[in-house]
Length: 186
Image (cartoon, rainbow, N blue to C red; front, top):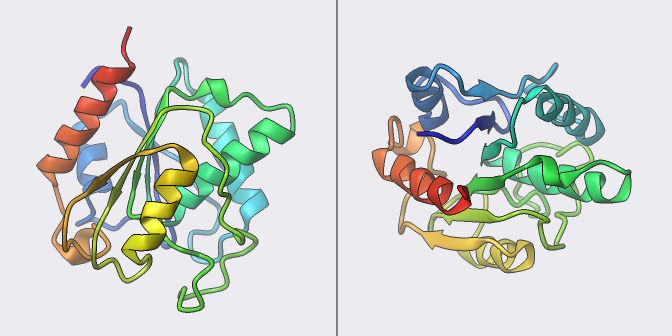
C-alpha cells in the first residue's frame, strides 16, 4: 500500500490479535500513536499526543482509527480547527467501530471525550460499522458518519470489529483501506 498510515488505537490499545496490530506488523513503515496511559484516557492529553505524532509524519497520513481512536480523530479535528492547528496535515481517516462515549453503557469514564463531536471532518473519511457493536448501536454509527461526512460501510454482524470478534488480519478491511487510499492519490 502506498499511503502513509498512522494507526490510532482506542482504549486499552489494540492487542496482539487485533487487525491494527497485524497490519502494523505487515507494513513496517506504519506507526502507531503512543499514549502515556491507554487505560485512563484524557482527551486533552490524547489530542496532544495525536497532534505530536501527526507533526512527526513526513507526508500527509491517513489516520487508521478504531473504537475510542475514532472519537480521538473527531476531537483532534475539532481542536485543530479551533486552535490554529491544521487539519490539512491529514490526507483522510479510516474509522472503524467508533465507540459511542455518550452512551450510558460506555465501560469507563471517557476522560473528557464527551460529547461526541458532530461537525463535519475537514478531510475525507470512511466509517466502517457493525450492526451488532456493543460499543455503538448502528443508528449511532450512521449518525456519526452523516455528521462527519464519512462514507459509511456497514459490514453486518461483526461485533466491535476487533480481535475478540475474530478480526485479526482482516483482509477485507485492508482492501477497504486500500480502496480508500487510492481515492486520495492524485
